[in-house]
Image (cartoon, rainbow over all chains, first blue to last red; front, side, top):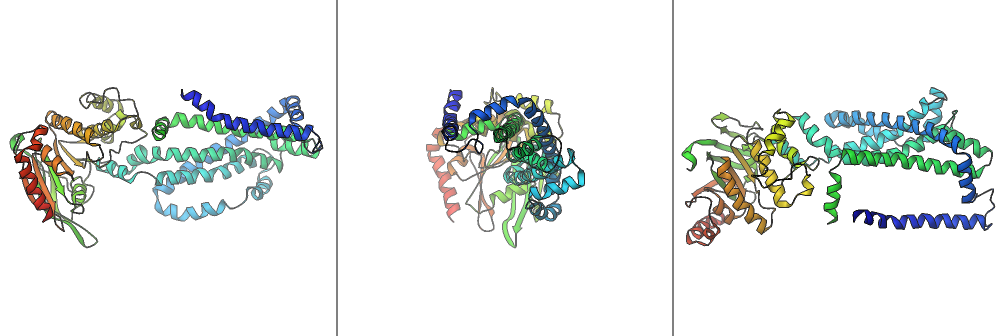
Length: 259
Length: 251
């Protein structure tokens, strides 16, 4: 019953996607736009198939950078947000800095990181960690702050220590916020990795992309874009799976709200 | 006093003020073993402040709280306090919610779970152990919250409007059940209510809190033994109690 519902609810999105593909096909095959500017979907699929081995190899590199950077970003955000939540002074001191650093554009940082760290994986992982850190730290801080005050009082009346209130109430309450932040960060992670690859490196989807761009191989460009989308979706899907695992109660709350 | 007259909770001369305004003044009350006492009062009379002091969440400006003769003034963790909402934690299974006060006291998780589970059928919660609170009905959530309060208690529970969020039918059902439970559990209860009928129907004694600052202006002993049938609510005796309380609250 619920399965059927979820299929019908996805129909409009699938239809819209098919519509876009059809318009694209008509525009390119109908000769409205020359094929060297806009390859047809058929050409793109062909490029995807013939380039599959090299695309997958590069995708693996990019995914590794994104995942490593994301892991570091998450770990750092967990530590810092928790410390900022625990110590009010630290929060007051660091929160403005957190916000300011986020206004620094990623693209401006990437070349610096390359200069400092060379052409290997380090600058890519660092950039991903920097860009994913903030949304997670902020959503964790929000999550901690959104804890039900009455519930905290109840635990205090039971004689709970600060540490126990954090473990039994504040941390689990922040999980929904945390995973929302992680989802956003997962897509930032892939984009961040690709951007830093543009600016110098030996492998990865970003490197491959600059190479095919120089060759004006637009069909291959599109194929890379599709792979980037796929990698992002894969990472976001992984976050959703993790979230279901870590927060099994959320399913029931959603049912309740729908009633 | 019912239950042999042994005093389990005693508050002496409690006063508390915030920002220069005195909320409650010189409140003294005692709760006997297994006794059920209702605390009635208009809004702003300081009922919740009194409960915060009794539970140890707040330290009174003056006065002492004694639990079985031991001074527990301003120290939480001794007297079980159930706030207005059921406040079950959405991320914990029902059994873990209920066992929480035991775990907070340093009891092992498995042991706490087992102890909690042994009361599930008495509280009408069979089969709910591994569910999440969102999967329970309002009445069941309330009973789960009551069980948690009971497990955390050392013979005394404070309930702040425990039944006010329930619809009339569920409320009546829970009243009947709670009256039955009380005696089995050997639990002394002090409960806040806005509902005069509820207070007379359930309590051994009704304390009326009124005035600014709030003081206990009257303590009425409700004579008929518990549990009382609903027909009691239609008797002359019941109406006489109600008239008395109304006149005190309106004064």
